[in-house]
Image (cartoon, rainbow, N blue to C red; front, side, top):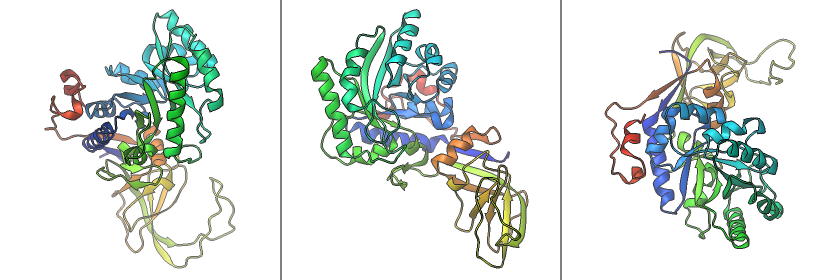
Amino acid sequence: MTAPRLEVDLEKIFQNTSVLVTSLRARNISVTGVTKAFMGEPRLARALLAAGVIGIGDSRIENIEAMRAAGITAPMTLIRSPMQSQVDRVVEHADISFNTELDVLNALSIAARKTRKRHGVVLMVEMGDLREGIMPEDLEQFVRAARHIPNIDLIGIGANLACQNGVSPDSEKMSELSHLAEFLETTFGFVLEIVTGGNSSNIQGSLSGGEKDRINNLRLGEAILLGLDPFSRQPIEGLFTNAISLVAEVIEAKAKPLAPWGNIGQSAFGKSPVSEREGNAFQTILALGRQDIDPDGLTGTPEIKVLGASSDHLIVETGSRRLAVGSEITFKLNYSALLRAVTSPFITKTYSLPKNRRIPENSEVCTHRTAEELHKWP
């Protein structure tokens, strides 16, 4: 087979999604399936929808357009504030977008009026992680202005945590967001359809059975794909952690000294290698590099140690074992490595699904999908 390649098991991703959707549904929390890590891959989107997500979220309008072109008609949310230069495309292909700027809302309004459409808006609130969001003390004034913008429907508020600065999406933060939702509803006399608490880092808190709040939606990508809690990097009970693997081919395998020699300066990527180890070990080079992956995000078998990478070479140590040139090594990836691998045009993406896979049309997980949509998966 072609290498390097990503091997994606859609069956395991379907199962991961189904487990999370069912567990969160018991807490009256819906799931928006996030496809940005796979650039809006339609096969992934169909697996998520078949497993019960209420819609698809992606941060790039280009990915949403690709899914629409593939025939996916499910609700689509742009989970990043739209660029003003793309508002026409956002209104055309996304049902909802996340927003923090009145200027963007006005631009969306103009685009919606031109096509006689209405566009749903979720306002993102800054809760301390310092990525995107309206400051809480400015939210009332913002909503007061936004409500008068034509062709724009304010349907919810949301927050993002544990992404930029690792701020915990704990019960205190979720309670604060819930109180803001209730304040807006009381002040303006409407009901917010969506209060989206955050991303995969929110799962454990949402399932812990703590105090009931207004959070009724989570946006899940990393937990579904990797089976891990991004906040703790620990496996989530009941989920597969091996749904995605990276396979690379050996192009050199030689016994070499463990420490470099000569006058040492910075490497091509600004690092100064430091090694006090002595002796030799088998060093294996794989046809893969920083242009394709984040080497710090790769985990091999216990006997495989990642030493580093240049732009197009990944160097690993295999101890006393020499691997054959042309053989392959399989790695697990963290989210950073996955993002870069999917984006690389030099890595082949393969999707596997048992040929006899059938999804019962009357299953609890799939009751909101039509028979026609289920049969299209994947």
